[in-house]
Image 1 (cartoon, rainbow, N blue to C red):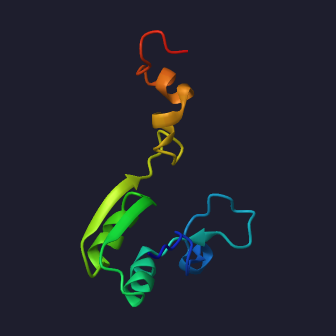
Image 2 (cartoon, rainbow, N blue to C red):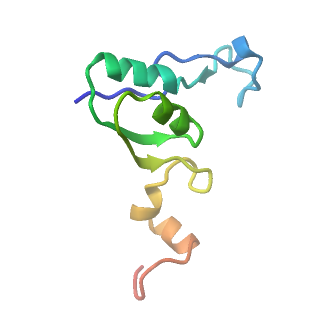
Length: 104
């Protein structure tokens, strides 16, 4: 079992002339899903489980994987990149109108 985080082998957005979310930062990292797959492949991974990659980055990850991929969770902007928050958070359940009757 191996895991890799989204900023593994990241590179600065400034190097590519990309807009930074926080321009005041000297270094704002950009994810590298292609390297994530390469890292895992070098470890001999046979089944890739994607969890929390951004939409688009998951497509790059899937395209470069040398084996089957399953996407467990994909980030989304509605839930502030915390898609599982809707499952365990009363705040989101209330906001989305999916609370059970009598649930506080």
